[in-house]
Length: 435
Image 1: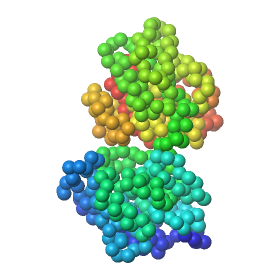
Image 2: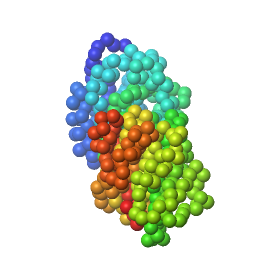
Image 3: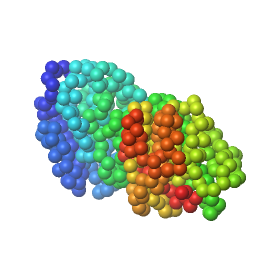
Image 4: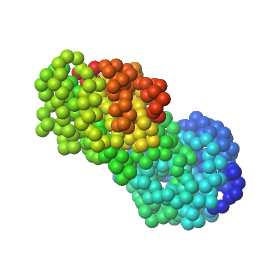
């Protein structure tokens, strides 16, 4: 593709565009029309989506019912495009948000798109580091995306065949094709999905790291995690038989899902209550013999002195749960910023929520809003990501003031550090010994 224009007329460049939308979600179609119109995109045709809730799914289908409907909807679009002899077709899903300046950025990068392209992706969840081609164009080989992309006639047959014979969601099939065909993506992304209950997953999951164009899976994030340490400050009050259950749940979950992230537990008390044989490999333990009230700042400072070789540190309470990809996203953002708040909203939970978390697959996103019973003040818990040098510089000013330690304003007001407000949701487990 070549162009010398500063903007792109999507209506001329992509004369064949569809938006997949359920008949029972016309509200989303109306909202999508408004978003497209804002960028001058007016020739998108609504494609009635296959409704799995109405027609059901095969017994052999193992993913969400909504994912089967998504697969059938995409298949219908591609079969129709081939039958009409189209050169290419642009497919939108109805929960897409378009980046500001999408027309200008597309135009600026047209000359960088290789002539052999089969698929152009506007945004994706990357499970491997994309290969830079030129400008904002990258070749992708392991990226999940089905919400905003252009499919060329050169790959119609492959897409149709794999959709007809495969038994997995659309974006999983795309990854299979990425290994042998030419998929290219824009980075930074030109589109992402909104934080709204998904018709596929039937729950709200905020894929904010797609908006931030972060690669949160693969070797790159593994390397970043290895340069960090998660430090838990812990005190067992002995008030409950469950006093360390949630801490051990967090440690075991993170060791399973984030094996490259070292963990350090600093326990304060008059005698140790956590034996090393109860902790998984990759988890270090340090006992801080101090009587009196729980001094988590001192625990964190002690932990900080024990990880002198790390570039990043994560300070966490022993009852604050973040999901795997949210932790990965925070660490990747910490490569760009000095301080990253672990979450924007903390939800309180009951023991039933913990049971659901304990039974869920920790590798898959889960809608935390379904588990959280109440919205808690930000200072009700902590999970803070920062560069180690920043923690060293600020640690003396923390004192015993927890609010100062976790307030992002404390770091901004110093005038020395950049701060990223993470949009994550976090769950505070019902842990009786937490402060």
